[in-house]
Length: 454
Image (cartoon, rainbow, N blue to C red; front, side):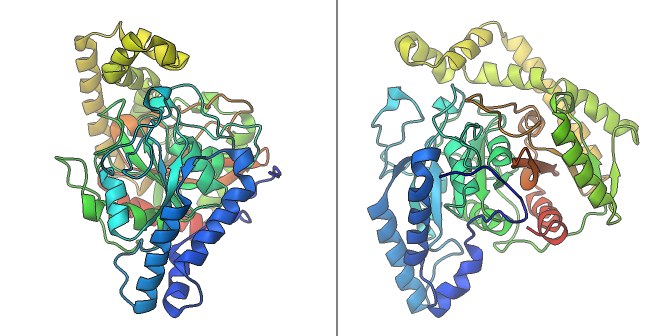
């Protein structure tokens, strides 16, 4: 039975990196660790509904192989033996990939996506496929929030966020074109990284908005997030034409930030009072440690950035709607009764967008990226909320207004599960410079671990 009552300092997420020493000395094994995952999943899955399919036999076989490698001292990567969930927008050769749509019911790819292939090659244990919103942008999925099943887990990485936030698996993959990583991580109390655009290879992943889609990495700790992300990038690289995720294989040491830039974005006016108060208190606690926090009233350049953020919902919509017409327009023409209302509405909006309007949106993004690069040099990171409040009661996925900016920019963003509002999670989001993912994670580690004690 799920009992509401989230407290960031006491909620226990499942972590992997700290179990590795026990695997090496024989005090624990990857197979036993996997069985603990299965037990935790079984205890809540009927209520949370995070998984589309679970491959018990395949996962046990992979965990047994990892157990033998640890016993024989011949492990093959930092993710060897790590149980991982895969969002059902990401192809797997041995499990159906249905994209959350009845159009693809029973669809069995012939290949793994680049990320899944990299994880398997590193000895990771692929548990199964997590529930996704239809094509990443349709109506809400069946998954419920693990901290209060009356509430949404967010989307579209609904099952991924719920599985990690419930403490049933140490890592899982999602995707992100608007808020599909940062928003559900906020609602479900998970750590999550949406890396620099193109940093982790998306081949074999359904994309509705190619210029904004990212791989999202969820985890029970920032160390596990980084280990999984860096491993995938090392073996699979980034998107074709991109240099891939920069940094070492080991999680970076924590870096205490000296200066942070606070962003209100278009989301502040939508944020409820309790969440505002919790965020203000969190910022005050950071300032009490001697960190400088500057906002829109302190620097004209920050004010200029905020003015751009105010128009972000419209800019994001222009980019997304124009790009997602393929292949969704064809699906609508051939299978109109199987396309969710939300996607039908989006396609109707897209029909009014011209190529000239799309080009202007691209030009606006270039100017926004230039402004971001300049402003990012003045601080260690930007800080804002991950969502304007907790996951709403009901099935609505909740607002992604705090996430549109990093999606359009393609800059890295991390959600930290450090706030509780109405006894459920709300995340704090930090944003970094392009290709500065490793340093951003180091700053995040100081905020979440050294300062907050997670």
